[in-house]
Image (cartoon, rainbow over all chains, first blue to last red; front, side):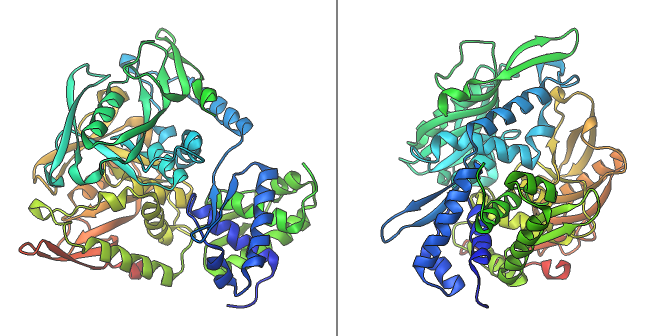
Length: 275
Length: 275
């Protein structure tokens, strides 16, 4: 490895931090990589941090002490968040997304890695500086991409509750919940080894109507002795007003359904209260 | 926005490119951001590119012409790929992962965003310079995180085939396949609007035994008039040797199952042939 100039080091440090959000890198790691002094790396990182602070693309956090180091948090600014949510509302309100049963077609958005990544960064915002969870949890299927990207933004694993009983997973914990779409009692399951008692989980889902699935996930977590640090959803319907859970952050509210014209009115959710 | 120094610009350019793999940014975009000349930005980007080339963290590609610009491709070097796959084999071979029916418990790895991201980068490798797909396609559930991260590394959307018939998705295309675990004929479905005729798709899944699900996805794509550019899986079993599909790239081969001791022998898959 040749001698690096400051600009070279900054390019590599920026990319390394950015590729692994929330992962703590010691100054020694970079000092060794570039065969230079920790004090030089420390100056490099200060430059990266202030450039990002000026630009709004995220934050560099320094953790002091023997086990210390630096990490990158993908923290979009409030203006970026609002602009993105406005765009999301515009997309969702487009003609042709309203299906039978007032269901809204959004998989093309939820499964787009760019949308999912930005949604994940926003849903992670209330938790990446304090109240950090040990894991993100969701229920299959449509919420998995945004839940994974939320977990990525927080540097924690994702846990996916399965619908029904999965006999191949060894010992399971199961719980029942009321499905929002079928109104029937359904079962969800998780391997017993998935969560340890005392761990803290952030519940993420794509869509909430009455909140039955999310209440199911909460009950599942209680069975494991795990704590809920929060609930975040991409979309929540305005009706029913009374949800089965008390607190949740939403990016988009689905206000009104105009079945005659096949349109849905989408507006900014309550996320502002959490930022 | 204040005046930026070179080191500041390089930090922000690196982070911006890295946050959105395969997205093409024009030089004008950065020139405007920093209120400077395109030639200056061009020099900055050359520095970022050569620092990365020296370090092995990825590649900066310059696209010339009026619609040109630069993009970041997350291209791990061969040594990094081998080291990661070795680690993955070690994890999979650990005691306690072998379940009944020779099923291997891997959701803790597949749902970890760091593992999923690196797996996605590797599965994307044969396709990010040429033979680029229009989308990545998988079937729910366990393969979704790695398929999403493959799509992210390629800068294309993900499409998730659903098991069974999803009545809420509007008009559907359905196809049948033989499930590897139940040996029964199952149905998968996709909304008619999900794929356009002539589009090119990369099939990604977490696990392949005989290849029934993947053949199902291939048949599904044929129904849409879409082309398969390739197949990539995280793990493939050595047995049966005869698969229902001809060509696939795998990271890990599950060689032998030692039921008495609850162990599985995992070795490096055939990915070397594709890199």
